[in-house]
Length: 120
Image (cartoon, rainbow, N blue to C red; front, top):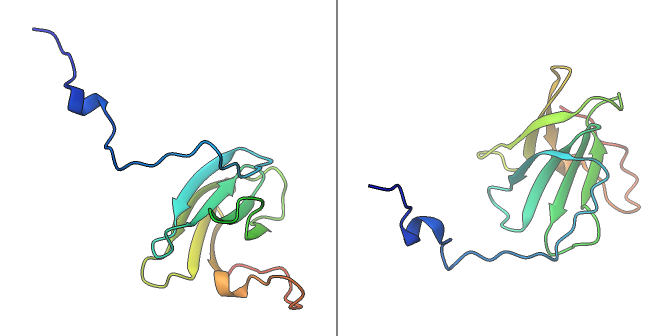
């Protein structure tokens, strides 16, 4: 008997939609990606070099939010996780053992005068 996979095991589901056109213009490699539990087009990326970026796939040119999660250039974000109960909270874990919780409501945009957000 041979271990030949069935066609169903090798064929992706027909409702998958894959695009080759989305490019996030990452400057560093990505350590973790997590889709928002409430916004179908929003995802968070944790990069080598300590950058936390939030993307909306409908806006392909740049991240909606980009912030350094650490004061040191050589510290990587290894893991990120959305809070499924309080959806504006996102946690990051870094190489140096730092665990940070971010309130996405504090991330300013445009000329609103908000300063660089800090973890809670």
